[in-house]
Image (cartoon, rainbow, N blue to C red):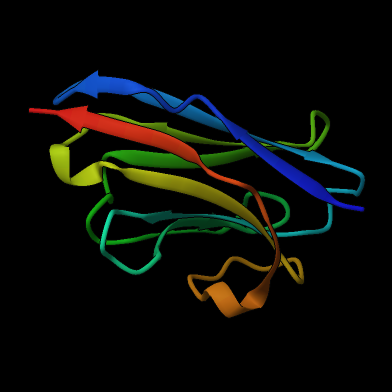
Length: 124
């Protein structure tokens, strides 16, 4: 059984940086793309960033481009989301997910395993 566990979320101030981690247990990470999504109160879940199996391809939502960086360490079976210059509108529960295949994609329907999420709150 594949399990994804996010960590690193907390309360920060606008302009701060934060790094989220997603540990993948019970299955390989090497051959799969990974993604980060987020959901703010009262809003639908939205795409944040994704990365292909070998890190050679990444995609970002326009709202986070230039501020967030996704990376993966296959040896540690962990995916990271480095978030810089955080804004109050980045406040949300952040979820990591494993893609069904090796590619990078912004479409939630293409991800088959999801974590429980970690809360990020950015105060102004």
